[in-house]
Amino acid sequence: MKLLNWKPWFHHKHRHLLVKLGVGFLLMGIAFRLLFIRSTDVSQELETPFPQETHLPQKAVASEPPAFVEAQEHEEQMQQTELPATSEVEEQEEQIPRTGNSTSKEWLTQLRRKCDLFTGDWVPNPSGPIYTNKSCSFIEAHQNCMRNGRPDAGYLYWMWNPRDCELPRFDPVRFLEMMRNKAWALIGDSISRNHVQSLLCMLSTVERPVEVYHDKEYKSRRWHFHRYNLTISVIWSPFLVRAAIFEDYNGVSTSEVKLHLDKLDKKWTDLYPNLDYMIISTGKWFLKSSIYYENNEVVGCHNCGKKNLEELGFNFAYRKALSFVMNFIATSGHKGSILFRTSTPDHFENGEWSDGGTCKRTSPAKEGEFQLKEIHRILRNIELEEFKNITDKASANGVNLKLLDVNPLSLLRPDGHPGPYREYNPFAGDKNAKVQNDCLHWCLPGPIDSWNDVIMEMLVNG
Ligand SMILES: *[C@@H]1O[C@H](CO)[C@@H](O)[C@H](O)[C@H]1NC(C)=O
Ligand SMILES: *[C@@H]1O[C@H](CO)[C@@H](O)[C@H](O)[C@H]1NC(C)=O
Ligand SMILES: *[C@@H]1O[C@H](CO)[C@@H](O)[C@H](O)[C@H]1NC(C)=O
Ligand SMILES: *[C@@H]1O[C@H](CO)[C@@H](O)[C@H](O)[C@H]1NC(C)=O
Image (cartoon, rainbow, N blue to C red; front, top):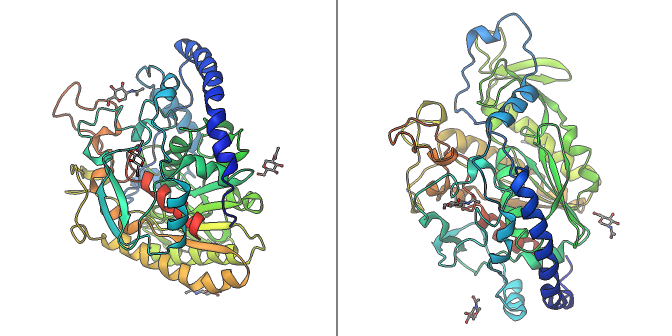
């Protein structure tokens, strides 16, 4: 990886006033427009939750082949989940605190050190996040905890601190300079989407990207930073292998997932050769009731009820699929930089997604306070084993594959989830209202902003 050329950075700073003036004019125009047009930038799509156990409603699985409902359901949901009037976000952009206080000298010192970035502690960070619900318009409604009325703010004032070295804060200007003319993609499930929004929020403190692509369901999207000619995509591929999913936006299945363990999802493999940087991840979708295929033949299933199929267990499928993915990465001939991100734990207490589990904590946990649930431990072990199994082959083939092991640091943040503030002002009408809690995705701003600190360090130092 080339070191940064610092000149453009300083020029950039001087140019900044001019840019600000220009941006100011633009923003006035935008603000005016937004008085009349609801912002479509804030993604309004609902999350597909990951039920811990995916019980199929028996009658729904019956004789008729179920329709592929995902797309239509989504359209309906898009209309249902109107945002409460957002008094527009863009005007506020000027007030965003700038980061990047670290001088180049400090940086260079830090550059030379290497350490285990994933062993550490969450320590107080009085300066808090570099963006807010006001300054960033990329935050999905269900993760916009500030706007949704989450009353406590303490969860915003922590940063990840590896034990043996200092982790510089994510510096959006540096990142953008490093990534000039590059193509990024975050590939995976809704946690990848959660993450891309965090990254976009941080980067848009410098330049607001323009959306240049979205699929029909707004699940795969691409943004372009014109000044830096950087594109960042999020690619919806929750299994990474090919899957037919029959599920609505509340996670209610009408049929098992049909999962081809020996076919990669073209959604990401087609784009793969043109990507310079990727963060690839998968995980909890493998817990869903599924029928497994190899060579287009049914080989068994997981949790498929009365069907006369062999129960192979989600771990069978997870290992097969991951092994296949890893092998593709190591042998495709494309030499991009790939971060394989480990899956993240949820923090449901006193239940799960589907039966009233909650997450009411307001500060990070101490190490050891939270144990990975058994199911997560199984997923995690497979991830680590499959990653380890391929590293030699990858490096022999010149593929820059690294492990982005956010699992342990995420485990320490039970306070970082939306909980009931998945919805806008959930207790406005009734302070004892029963609402769906989300203890799986992450508030933005929130703990996963720190993932970007780690990523930056891995890229700079790697
Ligand atoms: C930048 O860092 C210096 C020294 O580390 C500190 O004195 C100064 O207050 C910092 N400035 C900001 C804006 O944080
Ligand atoms: C941001 O959140 C605050 C509450 O923390 C709320 O008053 C404000 O309306 C929100 N702004 C936007 C643009 O969502
Ligand atoms: C922008 O970046 C892409 C690669 O992502 C490159 O193909 C293209 O030539 C670049 N455009 C300019 C104007 O540099
Ligand atoms: C390890 O990787 C090799 C390919 O390099 C593959 O053939 C083998 O099945 C993998 N082992 C496991 C346990 O996935």
